[in-house]
Amino acid sequence: MIVIIRGRGISGGCGTGQALVSPAAISFLSGVNPETGTIVEKGHPLEGKSIAGRVLVFPHGKGSTVGSYVIYALSRNGKAPAAMINGEAEPIIAVGAIIGRVPLVDRLEGGLSRIREGDLLRVNGDLGTVEILENGEDPKRG
Image 1 (cartoon, rainbow, N blue to C red):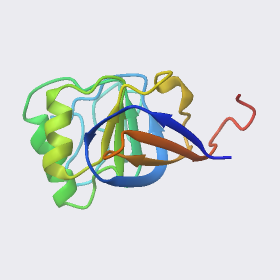
Image 2: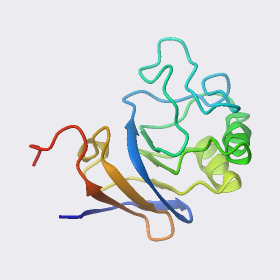
Image 3: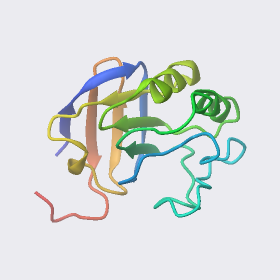
Image 4: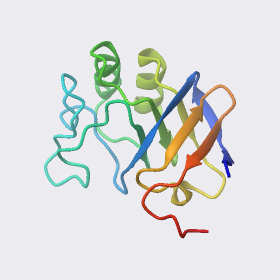
């Protein structure tokens, strides 16, 4: 059964991919390699993982406004996430998603806890919706 979660659309378009979930904020400037799409921030829960083609789920961004341009560079290099979901999108992430043409939704009903690592998601930034198409790591969740 497909579960639809409503939120607020920030950057338009649709993206589908497996969820990559971080409990920690992400700094795109010096935290993500724009050439490879790999999280390189030392000690980050996703360190060493690629965000390319995934639906990146994280509470919010952090760091410099240059992070917006890193998201744009990821898109130009074909290493951007398929979409992003934030608890609360702030300007750095919002601008990066818009100029990089990465769908972005925030303020999900029920918060980010409904999404699990590996869930197959479809994010619609125009409608502000997230669809859980298939459950990932926790098939017993309610």
